[in-house]
Image 1 (spheres, rainbow, N blue to C red):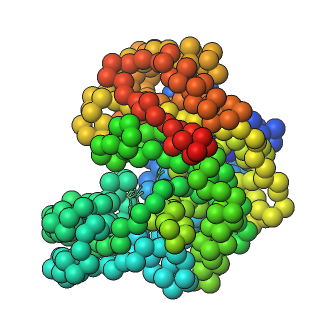
Image 2: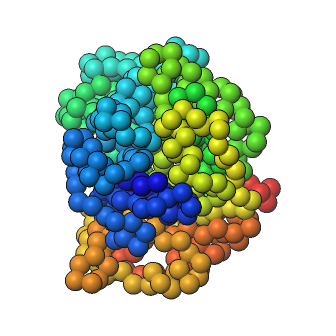
Image 3: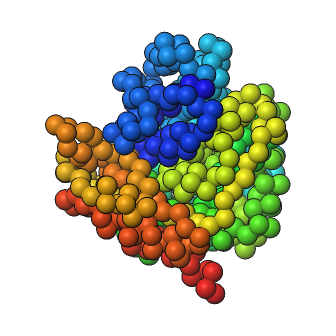
Amino acid sequence: MRIMIIGGGGREHALLWKLAQSPKVEKIYCVPGNPGMQDLAICLEGNPGDNAAMVRLAQEHAIDLVVVGPEAPLANGIVDAFNKAKIAVFGPNQAAARLESSKDFAKTIMIKYGIPTAAYASFQDAEAAKSYIRKQGAPIVVKADGLAAGKGVVVAATTEVACQAVDEMLTGHSFGLAGERVVIEECLVGEEVSLLAFVDGETVVPMVAAQDHKRIFDDDQGPNTGGMGAYAPAPVLTPELAEQVKQEVLLPVVRAMAQEGCPYKGCLYAGLILTEEGPKVIEFNARFGDPETQVVLPLLDGDLAEILLACSQGKLSEVDVAWKDGAAVCVVMASWGYPGPYESGMIISGIEGAKQKEGIVFHSGTRQQDGQLMTDGGRVLGVTAVAQDIQAAIRKAYQAVIEVSFAGMHFRRDIGRKALNRLQQ
Ligand code: AMP
Ligand code: GLY
């Protein structure tokens, strides 16, 4: 099988790392990929936003399966373009990707089909939105309707902050078109967990549950980021709760999408809050999570290429998906200043040392220049370790992390601690 991966972050590096282990895979191309991915694949230049160009590249290289990593090309209809060209592709088409690309669409589906989620209302008019906020009271959550690179959510402690967020999105156009509609949600209380699933239009196979660490500093302090680390499995989602999420969330939404005429194929990511009333959805993503993928795929005991191809062909029920015992922990190393402004171009050293300590090093924001590996993004590297349990995985991950260095390197020192605390209780 010849595979082409679209994207070039830590998620795509993890997908590549796992796909490359498949005996069925002959060659892998990445567009654009990153310096870490070059060891396992051929990186091609190209713009993932240009559907016609991506189809041409796949045809030129006789690709059997395209795997789309990020949300933007999905929302831009890249899967529709490959479908039209009769090239197998893993990911939802544009209509199905609305589960992520429009929060209003996702909420409408959830309410219509009785899927547990936070109560909400959606607005295009700022005055109407603000009067709703004042009526509901705080805390309250304001979300830009469209894709906002993980930055379109404001969890407001006061109605003033919520109203200000509405003004910035609807009147100040802080998210462009993505913020021309806002969704205002009830603020849910409980622990967060991510449950990703393989989906082929009908069959749903959940992965191991993972927990992301969204805030920049230890103990969940500071602003939200794309994710500073993750671990799996997340003990907070017990097997009973995972089954409940499958029955009450994943299966109903996949059936709903088929009924609405846009069957869902690809990775379906349910972001959940485990409330006192049970698990409720705070978001769907139409793709693998980052960094969740960096801990989930190392625990997959199966052939990822076979699974992804089966999803694209509607044959997921015919393949085996099993999970290894043990746990995985990923620590993300970021540039100083991230998620605010930061500098790039810092020389990175110690990656070989981290690998010697059995760390799996995934690149997120790096570039190669004059033979030197340099930082080139907010999130720079993810270092994953797999071990027999979460405690051992944490220890092993940090032993590898301390080998790596670059000027201004920042990482959280408490990745996985919540799982440890829960297990020790
Ligand atoms: P998102 O960008 O949708 O992942 O949201 C960012 C963060 O906002 C989530 O990780 C949650 O911590 C928080 N959040 C989103 N929706 C809600 C909600 N309805 N209640 C409480 N917190 C929320
Ligand atoms: N880690 C959160 C996301 O991928 O959206």
